[in-house]
Structure formats: C-alpha cells, structure tokens
Length: 100
Image 1 (cartoon, one colour):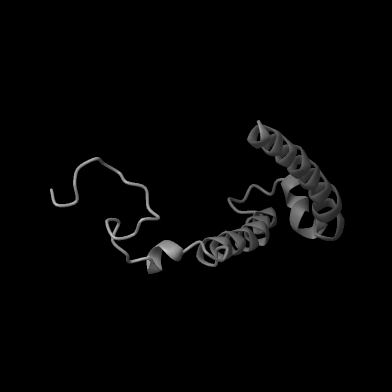
Image 2 (cartoon, helix red, strand yellow):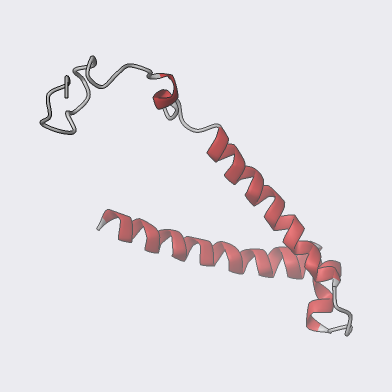
C-alpha cells in the first residue's frame, strides 16, 4: 500500500514539475530552442530536439551515479567470501547434511 501511495504521489509531483518546466523553461528563457516545435520547419531535426540532450544527460548521469555509487553496505556481498556452511548467520537453504 505504501508503494502504491508513493508511486501515485511521485507521478503527481512529476506531472507538476513537467508542466512548470514546459511553461517557464521551454516557453521562457529557452523559447529560441522550443519555438520551432510550435511552428514546424519541415526539417527532420528541429532545435527543439536539443531538449533531449538537456534533460537526458543529467538524468542518465544521476542513474549511473546511483547505480555505481550506491548506499554504504550495498556491495557487502562482494566482500563476504565466507562459506554458508561455516557462517551461522546465514539461513540454511536445505536440510541435507553438509557432508552430502
């Protein structure tokens, strides 16, 4: 239930952020890039396509940073080389004796 609420809240907030960005950034100080979107030039690429880079590069940088520099303790499994049989803190996965 908490997941559903947080997902809906995130969706609602991001819709607001998107609307504000479109109104005040694209129709504001970056209008010279966005204008040809409202008045098509007939070209395959438009200046408006630069927004892909403007928004995608920081987004991907944040995703990579979060992926490769995760919270402390995230990669503890890489350094834990103890055997499951010798480490009593692990749950037993089967009822088979260890000598089997």
